[in-house]
Image (cartoon, rainbow, N blue to C red; front, top):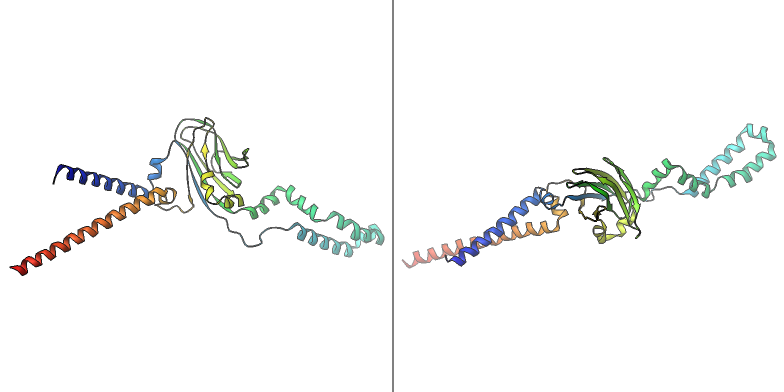
Length: 270
């Protein structure tokens, strides 16, 4: 074999080894770790499915309350004795309809926070977990833009929701010390769905100094080869390795087959 041929073979062998190693790292879930900068975030999201029509209509609640109160007012002896028949009649015909209306019920739902939180579930379209890691120096004003985020709960550290000047929602994490990791649970609304293919491009991580981090987005399934989902290039690497194996195997089969055919011809000539 000539020197040029040996050099080409060595180069092909190194390329094959590199691709195989990259594919192995992707399948074992370590490729993402090697490629992550000091500031990075993992965003694991899944659909938040609700029954059709889930929610609360203020008018239905108002109508129910009005009917219930009127029935009680008509049958309550104490009201009749205390207000008289005329007063009881005015309460039923004028007082209750004016006090119980869809506007009153809507304000009640908005102002009673526990009730408002429960009913806000109807706005959830996606849910998931966000893990922000700072493997570098101390940082100030760390933030992650996340379209459509409605609610956030910090399992570790603190986090809050703010709206940027462009109308995009973001998670503000404040200061992060070196080696700190924040684990957050998030719920997103229809804006996340409406973003479509532009959602991943709108999810950005950075700190107050302007240093940008890397964001890895996947679903909540924690399988060993999740890097194949978060790194599109990893899928091409694995595909390239499989293609090389296929081509090599096919060439070896052809060479073996040709060798056998030549051997049979030599035997027949003898």
